[in-house]
Image (cartoon, rainbow, N blue to C red):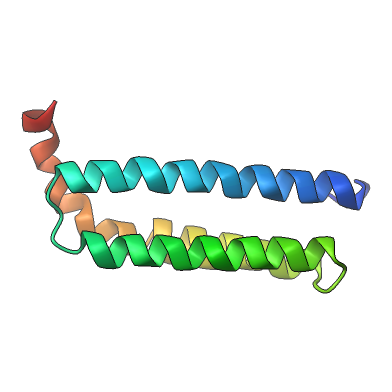
Length: 102
């Protein structure tokens, strides 16, 4: 999919993805705060750790110190599969409170 794109364009796409995930995490943290999610602090720390790693990987890719596959492996596996589809499930039971908050 990205095979024929310039490195600068790919870096820009990766940066945009990280920005979108950052906004998603911010929105999620606000919702979890409103839900009084008991593990909010730990969940926020996980977000910060993931974002710090993603930014570092993107910088390493831009500096030719890392292959694009490593960046996407982290984004797809660690961020999406492990966190968004894994850790986030822990708070789903608390979302029944959402109707009362709105």
